[in-house]
Image (cartoon, rainbow, N blue to C red; front, top):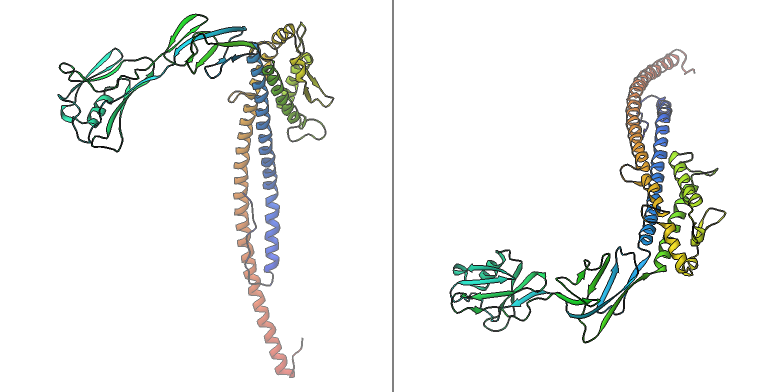
Length: 451
């Protein structure tokens, strides 16, 4: 919103001077409005800076939480000796182990059968109009007398909500190109039959070649049978995905062991997030500080960064960030040497997990100190952003009021100058008439004009 001078249209020779007066009055009236607009520009920039700072704080908190997650699981990762048959993922297990999977005789799949015969578009499917559907232990008696076609049978099956889906597909060849397909909604071994005239001839309308299957195998010699290939309720914290069957004495080994690279990756992400946040804080501190110089939020983040990097220590072979390969340059920038973790002994690795803790304890537990800054609703940054928004609205309203007042003042001044211009034009006209009269008298009396 800006204040522009009104255009003055006059008829006197002083019109240009009156426009200058209006321009000057407009410029003077615009000064306090411009001052408010400058405040608003700075405020919006501060809002952006705080928003970026909050994002950087959230990223650091997330990096700390990730360290806690990796540490709590002791950086255990699952690996398979044959990923074509079995894959595994460590979700929350915290003890190293080896599991042997053998005798995978079947993998889970849904029952799916097709009609034995093909049918014409309007050809009858049932000899009696009575058909019986069996899905597992459930039986459904269908009366399709009034719609004895393949489409009618399909609709009758789907109306039962029996846990199967019936469709019709067309081969496009022959006099009877249409076939019925019935597929179970869930995987696992399931009886699936469709019988015409169940009380009489009992003719089976579907094939019986794919009645579905469970995942059937042995884990450390113990038989396991599941309806799904994705198995997460056998070994706590470990998920197995059974992909193929085995033959004979073939076995697959799933090993849970500490993966130092997972810990290195988590620490590297922490250092990156730390440096990003540190840079944003540094930009608002010192002689070259930005618009957040002296801001409470900046000081608070700076204080918590110091606590994070300078004061947290424990006992053991790994009791500080330096023992993890994280050091700090004179500029404050963090550096990470991954070879330190790579060369950890078993004892050092255990001590590292003890130092790092979990998402709520140890070094990683300090994530909470940053989460209460970046929390989306109640965080300190959000509270400050809300205050900025309130102030921005106040400035917007104030600018609107002052602009409206100045515009009205311009209109009043314009009207006054227009009146003055009209009066001057009238006087100038009278002056011209008087001058012409005098010149005419001079000419008549003296035969010449005298200035």
